[in-house]
Image (cartoon, rainbow, N blue to C red; front, side):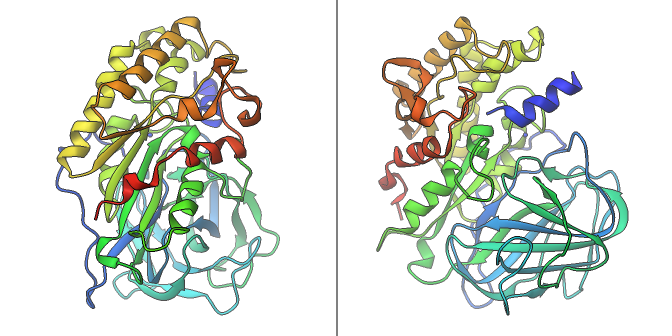
Length: 417
């Protein structure tokens, strides 16, 4: 079962406690000069299946922001740690190429004025702000020196981005990290906030995308930022005179609405991953395909769910997000007939997908609908992905497919001020 769960985390389209009641959405908090903090990038934490072992090393992680700003702060998490996590030093910089930072952009990060910080088990910390001109759609390099021997108990497994791990030593402020070990996950980094500047900062808001590996960007080109939320952010940033909109990705590969695989189910992590980012105003939900396919793939018949069960899960997300003041937009489930994952597709599963999609389209439970199914399916065989958008496993889109998903979104959905 553990082997199967690990495989699912790699190929499928997830907090440590039960969900808590919803509160009002966290408005982007005003800074001392009246500017507001806005989430510009997030990565949903999860417990690793095979954690990275560290021994006094520096981890440099690359994150592509959506909105820019003149000041930046980082969020670090020890969500799944059983012991305290000690960060010896942290730096943020504009990314150059590979393991290098852009010259002159390095900034040391402090926590309550201290160079380092100790994060208790299960906790999250927010850094002090640093002055750094961060362009929209740019990449930041966040470097953490972790002085203790430990395993990386909290990560985001499918980064679709290269992370650089140094030899032993503090290289957080180094121009580059030579002979780095390369990994494909983010470690301990939960989010990046910017102080909103320019345009209409009072109307800036964040769009949160809740999903599984299809939103996480599985099978997109590594280091290219070709997930569909990235393409959506590019489209929003290209508009002139429109309200500023961040796009933050709260997907976890293998995620389901109603059961855990790798990471918690969507209902359990909703408060932490969707309702807490600063400035969250909109939510796009693309969840349910793994609720359909995973039970047969993993041979877990006790986890079989009906279309009505999936719909009930969607209704819970809608109710809780509405209570927090968010506009909630539903995405139809994309085709999966012929997938190379053994037993993942069944005729009965396809019936469930069609029933769920019909409900998303017609029930009016969602404030609006994005028809990802229509955007990616083969017109001659609607149960299958279009060949032009198929990564090869007949479940996950390729770069062109993710771009088509983003282009299917009506940007006027996000114009409310």
